[in-house]
Amino acid sequence: MALGRHDSRAGRIEERFREAFMALCRPAPDDRVLAAFSGGADSTALLRLCLGLGRDLGFQVLAVHLEHGLRGKEGDRDLRAAEATAGRLGVPFVFDRVDCRRLAREASMSIEEAAREARYDFLERTRREVGACRATTGHTADDNAENVLLNLLRGAGPRGLAGIPPERRGFVIRPLLGFWREELEAYLRSEGLAWVEDSSNLDMTMTRNRVRHDLLPRLSRDYNPNVKQALVRTAAVLRDEEAFWDEHLKRLRAGVGWLAEDGAVRMRLEALGRLDRASGRRLVRAAVTWLSGWSRALTLEHVEGVLSVAAGSGRSDRRVCLPGSLRAWSDGEWLVVGRPVPAPETGFERTLSVPGRTRLEPVGLTLRVEVDERPGALDLKNLPRNRAALDLDRLALPLTVRDRRPGDRFRPLGLTGTKKVKNLLIDAKIPVGQRPFFPLVLDSHGIVWVGGLRMAERARIGPETRRALVLTLETIEE
Image (cartoon, rainbow, N blue to C red; front, side, top):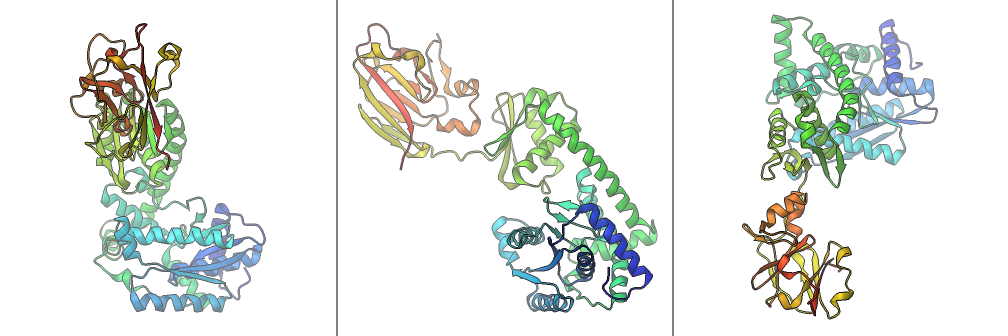
């Protein structure tokens, strides 16, 4: 890298960086690479190293800076300092501002989480706008050690203890994970480059800062002088374990009949029940990750709650709340993880016009009622599910349509006894979230049709039928 005169240590840093970068990304000449640049020591070292490698290989580096709106004048100072440093290095500079406190309130997350999500959204948006192939961040081995220890204190599982991954979201790479903060600062001093200090990194009310400035130094002094190296080694071992599980999960998903569609993941309860606990936990985490894009807020208590629902032998009244507005519930032979369809308005009831159309706004349907005086011409065996044909003269008018209510039961077509409507829906494997959208049609004596599913035996059309009442459920068209 021809960026000026270096001592031998600087040259070794640059060679190690080249190896780490090329192991993660091989940009073509004229490609663009983003360097997340806060102006601090780690990101300044990242920018300088990326710039040198870019000049050697022919790709362009852009410095990108996000002002989080959390530190007032100090944040503005860092923005100006970052822009000035980029200018001295001859690097194009892109920046944006966000209000992370507002984002945190709106998304019901911590300010730290909101800031992290805002940074990655900014990187992705900028990458698309400028046509960059990759974005780099300045996470170091120190960050990795702190992350592992923080996750251990929070009770994280193997994925959390695997530390910071070298790649994220398919385009973010972290080529400095093999470097310690101390050696990067020494590199900057040898290059005559200054950096800014973020005062929030000294705020001891923040857990990460207490781990960095208090817990890790005490562990190093009193227990293991190489504690940070030990934490990083543990993370490397567990990353390999996670890679194994990622491959194994493909077979596990096939084994439980994994269906991921319409904002929900379904797994067969029977197959899930045959698995060992570790595999079950992995599948639950995989379902939440598929639905939300991440599972960081998912605790062991959440996962065990889902598995207890799965062990409930299909009881549909058991469910557990999960982060991100997700729910898990059993539905017949399936465990479902997803966001339930909002239940329609309860208590609705309408009188039907015969013939005529009745709008059922709470369930988004229209019920069309027609009288057919040639019932013998109806193809009763091939009626679609949204249609029913009843013997009009067997019905006691007026007719009404309403939502399902506790205790509703009737005698379905073909049965000798009565059945609860709830059990009819369960037996038909109608998902819990969809059951409220099956309206009931009643005459003066009770239910004559569970809309879209089954009519009553007493309204059956027979040889003596003179007039048929044809009911059709249709989606409301605005």
